[in-house]
Image (cartoon, rainbow, N blue to C red; front, side, top):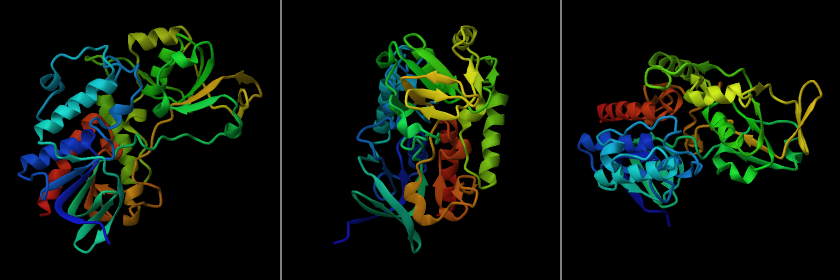
Length: 358
């Protein structure tokens, strides 16, 4: 017997920043949970990727959490302790937001695939099927950690882990950790680990440090330039890369002190992983107990494979948020909108385009 089929106007896949912002704009347009729209989320509770951040990542250290439309974090939670774990605060904020929307999220529901079905798109899940006039995909990247290939990595006798698996520096006390990656997560890991362990920083290219803007973060022009670079890749049909990696690093007083102390001394990629360390191109070696891959994530889009969206360059062409090869599909949090502020803006645009097609 085939699973039950529910007919809705719009299915939103994912309940992180982009998915909840999309639900907000659908709600404002007069659609309601049920036959108007359905938000499907694979997690068993609110918070999106923030549920899985390492415990030592506090609100003072996060790289910006943009308020969701219609309810700021302060309005939802009151003053937030900068020392509170982001993995606790942000999910609490998202939970309050879902309550404001009337609890529209159905979870845990894992989307298996999205495919054409006549005038609608068929969304097959582990909890039934949905026939939708439009689908807004907001699945983010956290479930697809990326680790580059290095010769010998499979024979490393120590521990290898990704940012997605990192839970804090304590378990590495007295060890030597090679941290691979040139983004914000890598330097945050180095800042913590260097207090209890020896570290070596490996980056594919020389890190770019920016002086802080007026608000202490990256200035507006630098952010716009980073988004534009990712948008150019998407427009060419290439894999997007990430906005975060394109922005460079803000030279906060903490990072300036770490650089002065030699913690943020970058090394080029090693040539090979050895059982107990790594070997550089010149033949020298660095002993290591662990390798921490802070090498980013890829968009979680496997469930969209039946739609055949990929271009020869590996990316998906979009016009606004609409997939060029399947105009009934909208991508929020993909390419230039893969940031908290970008996802919220893309959600508004996606809903505008969805409603224009009714």
